[in-house]
Length: 232
Image 1 (cartoon, rainbow, N blue to C red):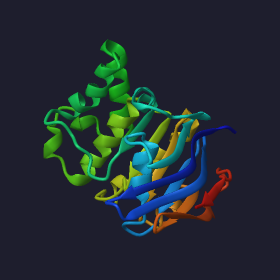
Image 2: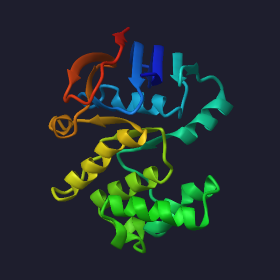
Image 3: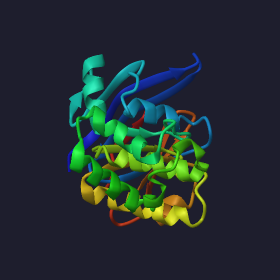
């Protein structure tokens, strides 16, 4: 199986002090991966780099085996990679309009737009929320809307930063069952989490992060494959 995202000889500083350093890291396509570690270990920084929101200070990010180089290429490839942040920003509009925004930018309109939005809302138990104001929702509801907004774009890579923070006990199984289906739809899912139980509920490959360095901690289920990883 070909790697969809790879890191080579990466270094990145934050505030002039923190260094994220990874010599080699390969994410195979259509898998679930977890980044686990304490606050400040570098999980969010790594997600931001993988989302191509900024270039690393040193080294390369590769997408489908090709090195990502330059602003124009990063902008083009970002249409295939979606990051859902820990505190997602929702527009001051209805839930439906929030989901429609990215589709309009991609010129997905009419019946196809409606079908994608309704399917994503249904998958996350949000059908009855379609006409509600997004900014009036609870934190957990906002997380579900943010995931639905990401799913309508049909990314090849979905990056999630603490996605189940704020979800209530009833919402979490629905949220995670939706994530479990994504590799079968061609999506690679990379999740940063401090929830130690989540990898047990949703099998995947676990990577430990400590002070900006990666430590392999293994797979949590039979549906995963090995990754190549080295620390700097």
